[in-house]
Image (cartoon, rainbow, N blue to C red; front, top):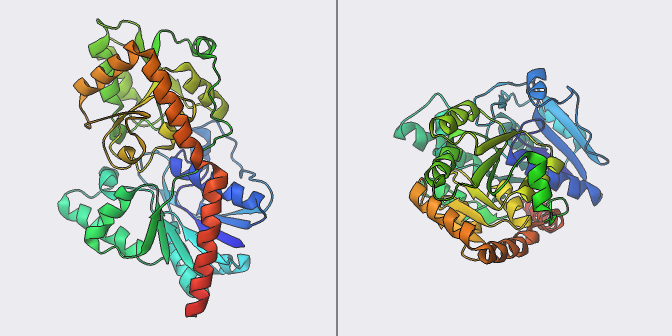
Length: 396
């Protein structure tokens, strides 16, 4: 098949959406499908911020990348770009001659994909990755009216495809009161099951990052909706009772400075280590240096970072919010009320004092997460794309 994939998030933007799209696309290309990515053109500063060369990424055989001119746009990544949809870009899509078009976000690039599907008469499928209500603070609009209008627009957009996926049911629950009616199903993001492995070298990995004692890990963007401050507060509350508990934070983002300030103010700057952005191989090492993973975000549809923690056999403590509660249960970790620092400290203490429980939860987590390999997820998308083509051709 020839598959055109449209996304407003793409390399070099750091996001789980980017990771998911690239991982699935590469697996489909490996099987012989032709993949064309349509994405924003990022600025040299976007590359420089990550110490990346300003050149196109090489994704291998059967994959092409088509960039559209874009403007800066405020997002949680700090790298957001928006494309003004013009419609005539469908000519570039026509040159690729796709069998199916897949849109991943409802902004400018997504609208270009929708227009291309209509103009070229091709089947359209979509994926909604984002809890709209949780990201309104990045826009110039605020208030209940703006929130409703945003969700109405997103619902309108995702009623256009023949089929819509999301990483969790919570996304469909957000759209349903606004008239969402498209055929839909939950499909996990693909996980890098070959790279994220338990290395059984925790002491050596701790030494590599200058860590010691019982280490909590957070990995991902440093942004307000991630509520990393709650983890720092928990470490501060535990500093007398459990003096060897520390926190490693892997990632960068707009909240880093405020989090560093908070750690100093709470007297735990020596127990909170900011690792910055880590390439994947280094990130695997950081996971293997930790004893538990904490995710207090209230804006996750799944959290690839958390799922990778499970692959490395880390027990998880997560907020009972959005998609997290669909992937964390009593077999692989703990769910606690969002923002409940007391509950977080209690669960950290329980994991600290019960190494056997940590081991059991970690092993169960890996057994659960391993099912979401790129091969398994690509199998599902192959079936969906074929079905979309069949149904569409019957209607034409």
